[in-house]
Length: 358
Image (cartoon, rainbow, N blue to C red; front, side):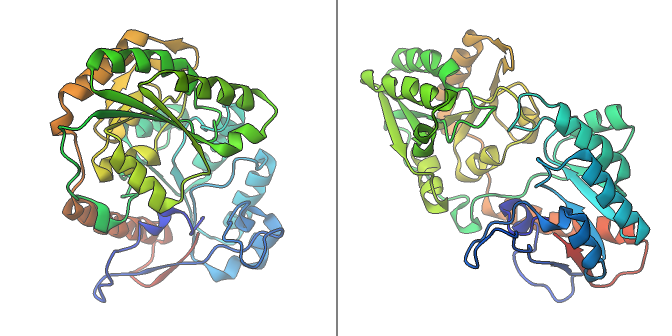
């Protein structure tokens, strides 16, 4: 769970092969406050003890990815106990070792203390994250890479030539807790001026300005960068998928101003579409996909490393690492098979059609 998340939907085979084992991922139950037309899956009903008990016979394997951010450890313990009482295997994918929505990671670690130790199988995205899981919880983790994020038919397409201006993108999005674009803007603007024929594109979701808190103040400070001729500040509603793919193909490099975190779907989308990434050295972004890193964390920043990272990306702009469609298709097939094998192992039964609660 959840089923309606791009990471999970892209774990299914791209094409149906009747000779392959199959997993049926159950649709997400509608939250109690959701409208009939609302596609929202959060908060997930599968993490409500009563709901889980009432639907315990509808699935074979319980696989948790996201959606437990606000769930108290006591309720997670109850969920684990219900699964054990009904002999239901529990698989956990650890996407985040530091929750990107909260600077204080103590709650997230308390949740993982319960979930990781209770899981029959643990999956994560990088070997570095797997090593940390083993070190903290003495639990092995299977390492399975993040599947593609952009649609397959966009992956591997030829991008515009490199003779045009060099566009450095910074997307503040909705100023999630781990995003600190204001800290890096001066370095980015100065480095762009040094490079020549470079433009900085700063995007901000308009919802930032609906907040009368620190986010609104940061948003106002960011918009002030439009005083620089080389900076294009754009305030707009949150991109839909089509707009996001177009945006990533229009910029040459995406600078990720993450103070903390672990892995990134945004990084995967950039790799799909041939956009270079400059990522912080916190978390495991450099282990996840090819990118250039700089020194940036909760209480540290080395500006010279960001400037050098941008110079390096600019110098190598004709050799930006990018996925091919064939590579991503093979990976998707592999991931589908590996997940089936993990479910089968958790069940300790023979090959059969599996129904999975997602």
